Amino acid sequence: MTSPRGQLPAPEPPPGRPWQARLRYGSGAGGVERLEAELVGSAFAPHSHDTYAIGVTLAGVQTFSYRNDQRVCLPGEAHILHPDVPHDGRPGTDAGFRYRIIYLSPVLVQEALGGQPLPFVADPVVTAARLPVSLVQWVRRMDEPLSEIEVVELTVTATDLLRALAGPRTVRRQPIPLARLLRVRDLIADDPTVHHSAATLEAVAGLDRWSVARYFRAAFGTSPTRFRTMRQLDLARAAITAGATLAEAAARAGFADQSHFTRMFARTYGLPPGRWAAATRRHH
Image (cartoon, rainbow, N blue to C red; front, side, top):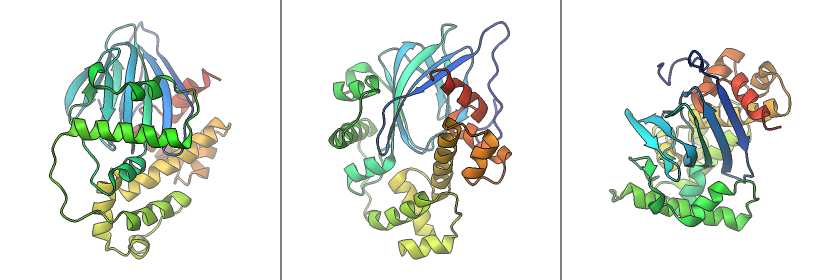
């Protein structure tokens, strides 16, 4: 299997077995995305997100690599993935597996934490007994709209679970300068096609570049560069969904070329953009 930092090939079906991937996006909100995925006969390549991912297995056996260990998630159990930690995903049996998942922005978690470092859950598989009922319902009822207050309630519930699962931690002596980091985040998010220099980020934050990099990851779980790439991919996904070709989507999102776009897409979603588009179109 290739490294998550190398170019990822499209997953191929084992001989004699059909390949099937279906992706369906539910109702989301600012900082919240919900997805149902079904996979039979192949695997998601190693990839990582810049969000927390909280998924519940609905059917089948899901196996995945996480922090150099093989994990198994059974129906009713959840898996919780930290931002920027590489993982993959594959069926544990020939029948495949199906799950629903919430992608939760670290910015929302950070707002609920009030400037503390993001909690890290070392063991990603969570038994059904430890899952708050309300969180499971937000996962399962992914087609129901989320009101503003429900986003707050979901975030608080998820954050409390993350803190409980992370266990005791060493308190940071110096608080994270969240307001300054949010200015950097907003600058990048406003137009991710623009590549800002380190000097620009220093000026916006009022911090040296080393502090920007260090505190940005502590606050949001990823680096400024990775955050920009993820927002570029958001633009590209929207363009593909609207009917753009892969070359057009890459150009609109500000990637240097389609090859670079394909590598970044696969590293993030575990499928190359063409296969992702095909899997998504199955539900339209």
